[in-house]
Image (cartoon, rainbow, N blue to C red; front, side, top):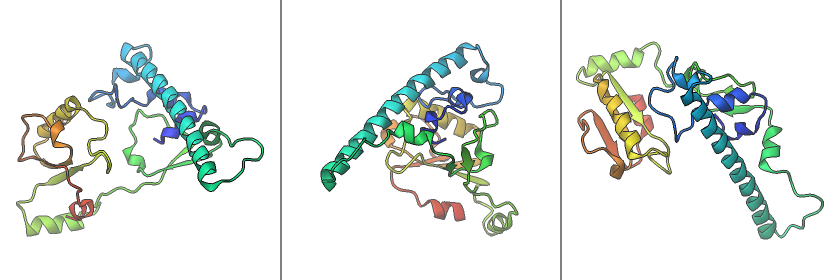
Length: 213
């Protein structure tokens, strides 16, 4: 979901039901989770956290827009005529559509639809199994599935803490059929995990090479 969609008032449920990354726990996205049940303590807790996060994001983006504009005026030595340009909050409210690099199949069933979000992302699935069948015949010793886990280029772990990573690795190890390649800072790793199933690196991963295999 685009972070700036919080500036839109057209669908308040979107801001209530999107789980905060700092407070979400494993399993809260599952259908039937109490986090989506109105008047439930977990649901109320999540909504309050989202309201705080949304307010902080608004202030941050508005302050950044002011700073960028001031920097532009200073470096370009352009004189300011008339009123200052609108804040980011005002500009984003005027955006008619947000194009998201995500496939519709990746949307959680419990996530409310929004008229301003258009999903245009592809999906990396070889539906007819032509390539997969060929690989299996050539080398049957390869694992039936390989999962690539990467949270970004700048911060490999995203905003996960050691406790989050330990819980995530625990879920990985329950699925014995798959091998996991994870880009993560080594100082955040749990002490004990299955290193034969979960391969961790801090270096950049050749994602195309993994996907093509």
